Length: 286
Image (cartoon, rainbow, N blue to C red; front, side, top):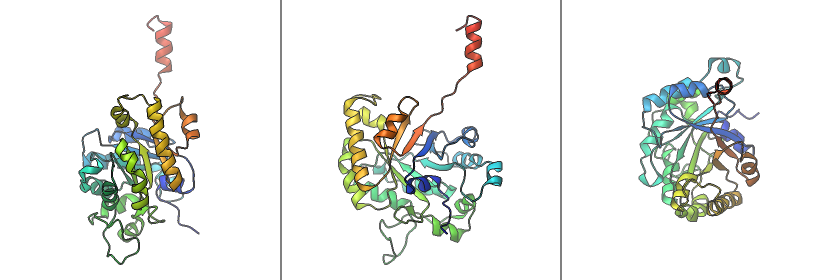
């Protein structure tokens, strides 16, 4: 009998299912709010927010819910925490990935990965070193050894963490997800080579915002040129069996997003204030 997955994102993608996620700020209040939501995963957003490892640690702890832990049938958290780090692929600051993983994150989202070299570095930064004669040696690991906090967060021993903390799908039993954001024409051109030459890429996420800036159509996500770029990415990944994520899923576009072939669906919850809205209408304040 197969051991249950700890990473719900990997479990869903490996099973060919759709996975639902959202970006959230690395703040305890946000973590508490999302801890009982129906999302499979949260991506703590540190690319456009200050990097604060202590606050990120606290946010990940607050994402855990005691009632869910008590009623769960395994160690997998109800909502899998991933982290989008501040550095672009070309900046090669492996320490951000190292710190996020050492806190217990189940995966890293790398912004602006444009080349094969950057892709190889990003995957390597999420792996522990091993000898060249070892199975699945490449990309050769660069991650420093400090597993205690991550093992505690996962609910396993240090040795169990070592066995589970390789990248998927390079290691079929790995529980670390490496996701790349494709945000430029250069990245699209190099994407086939990245996927063909760098094992361990678990997810491609389309960076619509920055790509639309480059195209001269800022945030016009349904512009024909933007749709053409997204279609190219979907086709390249589809030919290689790699899941693609959409970062701006709404109630208006979700049906089209699913039909297009995206499997990692990121949406932002919409807050409504029905009593306030009705009250303002009834009192002439609308």
